Amino acid sequence: MSQPTTNELPRHVAIIMDGNGRWANRRQLPRIAGHRAGVENVRVIVERCAKLGLETLTLFAFSSENWRRPPAEVRLLMDLFSVALEQEVEKLDENGVCLQVIGDRSQFPRKLQRRIEKAEESTRDNTALTLVIAANYGGRWDMTQATRKIAAAVARGDLAVDDIDEDAIAGHLCLRGLPEPDLFIRSGGEQRISNYLLWQLAYTELHFTECLWPDFDDAEFDRALESYASRQRRFGMTGDQVEHAKLPTSSTG
Image (tube, rainbow, N blue to C red):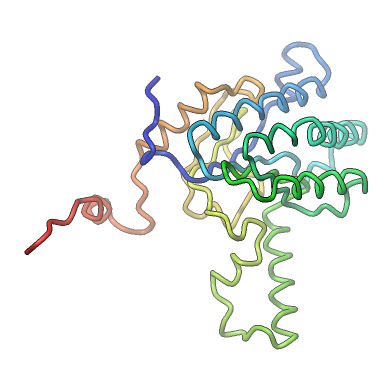
């Protein structure tokens, strides 16, 4: 498989890591075994992103709707998240990865909240790759909390209504300060975005694969990158305009 060139690479990849439970079921294993295998695979993809020089990787670990799952599975997921943070943060720091966790943390056990805060603090100044974990996150929640902050700023007199524009809204969302995703990947065969980064995915290229997340290896990731590199991103322009913008301008003198 050909190695993607730098100018073909996305700056920011966002992934829904789907298929852990089905991976376990096919092997007649408990669902938590699939989730453990999925966590192991996160390491593989993080290392691949760092090697390629991507700027940001955002992973959907636990949605605000996942609380509807059986309570025993939710507890195991919380424990798995906590253990993964404890075991992986030192290696992330050594490799220059900055960890950020987005979502509503208020429903997490206090011990997990403290572990998140500690992990973020210890990796805050790293610049090799920004790894964003979306946990108890939902795109509608993200826009709702941004709207509340903007409304409060208007009520305080810190922001005029006429100054509320796209930049003002984006500046109150969870991914503020980071580039919007260029490429969205969903493993596991489902073809929907499931309330994930609803604002930020407006112009993102979408890639869906049947591959279950624990099996989503370097080769599968590179196939998604190749698909991305083959596309023409127009952002409302015509194809001819995009191609013309790529042409080098001749110097005069």
